[in-house]
Amino acid sequence: MQLLEERILKDGKLFPGNILKVDSFLNHQMDIGLLNEIGKEFHRLFADDGVNKILTIESSGIGIACIAAQYFNCPVLFAKKTKTKNIASSVFKTQVKSFTHGTTYDVIVSKEFLHKTDRILIIDDFLAEGNALLGLIDICRQAGAEVIGCGIAVEKAFQPGSSRIREKGVRVESLAVITSMDGGEIKFERK
Amino acid sequence: MQLLEERILKDGKLFPGNILKVDSFLNHQMDIGLLNEIGKEFHRLFADDGVNKILTIESSGIGIACIAAQYFNCPVLFAKKTKTKNIASSVFKTQVKSFTHGTTYDVIVSKEFLHKTDRILIIDDFLAEGNALLGLIDICRQAGAEVIGCGIAVEKAFQPGSSRIREKGVRVESLAVITSMDGGEIKFERK
Image (cartoon, rainbow over all chains, first blue to last red; front, side, top):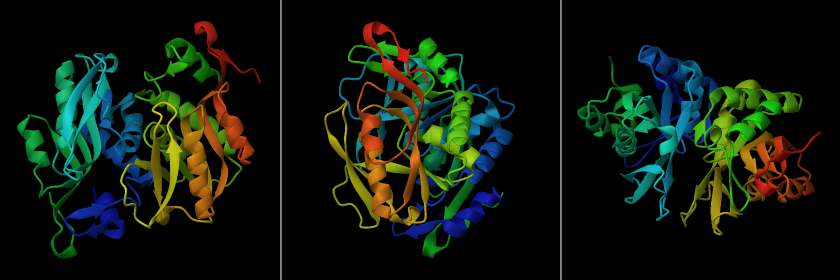
């Protein structure tokens, strides 16, 4: 998606350790016009797949998911990160390892809102290691819900996330696919 | 706002200790059609106030803020909760006490995205004790930004939050104002 790639080149900031910050327009401050274009593009890609619910994970996926949901005319469900030990039996639960922090946290979704009749589009802002998305796929499978695919704003293709998700048989559509950030230069996949 | 009150009566769930759960439509699963009506109403209330940015706090305010921002044609900034000890000097920071958990956490916003020229509408899903909103107001004042007001979906008027915010000279507009939940019956303020 050219608009997103151009914005990353213009306003993204690179830091040592292959860290790309896009917090001026995507995941701290959010450009709602851009989010609308992202939402439209997800809809173009998944319009014919009978999506009836969008699933994301707090926090930075929520804005993109809500704006996108307007094009699918469906509700959004966001998974919650928790450190509470005593989780109610009324939730689906999975464990997600944080690559950044080196810790593991529980992710939960109420059983009330995820069913085996659901056709789920998972949306998130970033895909790198893929741990959060694999957790969301696990939760959907616990519920017996069908995962239609994953819609991602920015993918770091030099990290293994998208391969790990496709190995699960899940379609991944990333709107900006970064193949390299070596030497401070961001390169995108040319399709 | 009649639509929201009706929805609370229909789908809200009361639990002991004056706990109202609205997680089927507002803050776990989100009804995007309802969020659009909420966003329109916030715009009706604050349309003439020159709002140029919406500020909220993760996680459950983000969806409402992003949908509302479409009517204001402005970006959304969400404050982050953190337990990291070494906070960079590049952020505004405040402390918020969690009434539910009895703990205190830090809330941060990057200095890059909040300026003294900003006219901020603060949006959140719930107002009870008001601690999170007071934290956001404090952050705006650190930045020298003007707080135009607070737009709240559901206010528990029998808790002190809205009084505490109005004492700071800040306008509060709550779309559903609950005056009592005694005996399992939800009563709304009649204006």
